[in-house]
Length: 639
Image (tube, rainbow, N blue to C red):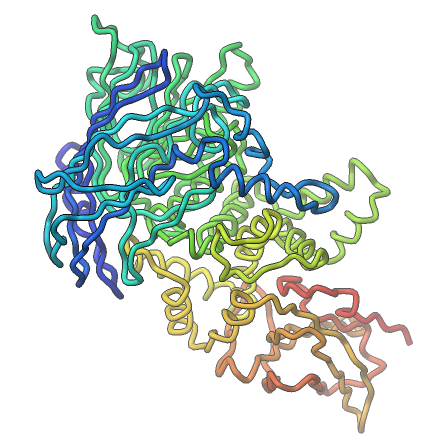
């Protein structure tokens, strides 16, 4: 096992070179000392930075996330400003932040102070830009060079408000340490990616981490990577079920190592419990949680998270690609669910949240999307996969949620309406998308994460409309082709920071269908889909059915015809600008007809049946097309 793991580390620690572009590299060696009485820590870190870009770099930028947790910070102002806008009668601020930052006491704020920055042993000038540190280099870093960056800093851990902090108000976890250290910003083919932190997404540089955390000996930790000194620590890290080993020192050293990741997270609490499950290849699932009261239901729910992750892992790897790391941890903490390298902070033992964060290992931690620019890719793709994995785990479609709600309130007309228009899979995403269209607050998915006008539009857009993007792609290319595209995309672009154009290029090549129109309409605009049955008549024994495009976005159509003798036929009408068509789509049996010219507002389908034989006509019977007015999609006939 040790030899296999060493070879594994060597392989994935090689510089990640994209098929389309170069990648920077930042290897961290960190030593952190935590004072649990003052909630402060000091740190030293050495970064070996490899400039694989073609450019000489005259500056470096680092994130100082903790500086956001102060009164009148950009995070504070942004949240309070959004709270002035009402959506469905409620303030639109982030419910976790609200206006809490303005009233923080001095010992409740977060801050990070840099004591020194040296590059190749030479002190550098640096400037604070709130949550960003700008380092002006005395000597540019040449293209192809390897540079040693040394930093010393002090920090105060804020009261838990957003992702990072202490004394969590939800679950009383002592420390949730995510986005906590001076983190080097990414420099890519578009230049420096520097974005002030106002509570949303991130983007990082691939590298190896060797992190030593010195903390009071009563504390127990979970985090990114493998515990290098597991034999010294015990507590289930050396082998399942062991207790925390005694030490004569006041503080204990926890040394985590991680290969080829773009972030590092840890959490700590004296009352943590630790359970684990082994999956194929000797890899481990860790679940680290608090249950101070010893409640049996809580205990059972956390064990269920561990068992569920083990149960679905083979299915996930078969469907979405091989997980390349030796472990994954679900760690009690944070403010909901937030993904990081080799683990997630999760506020409670929710199976759905656990699956969503797990899938971020594929659609963020390994592919490394720039989720500041393209949040719909990491959140939308993870949400799509979450629904598939949940369906596999529960062996039922997502529409069951709405049936459960209707059972609680049989007279709820809104739920009844939703049941009439939503697909069985991804129903929550479609309902959320239809809602922002109804409210008139939808924004293009090209909007960067921080630039959305409302939190409501951000959430429903990047999660729900991003999820629908993949489900509709299956409607266009066929389910099997869509699934192949996702798997091949992961295998081709892992560890390379791909973007939307990379995905679309691969999807077009594999499917043989031109798809740029789909991206331009669905991602780059807020134009909606709406088709209707216009009219039908008979000429010389041939039934003609005319359909109309009312919405501004064109789509191929599946048309289901049911006949009085019990027969059913499905016709597929491609778009002419696809220059191709789907060949197979799940178990659906369909006939291909002449393409619909995308500029034409109407299309007539001809069938060799008498009109009186037709019992019903329905556009998109699978309901995968996000048609915003479905009441004009079906016509029942009685003769």
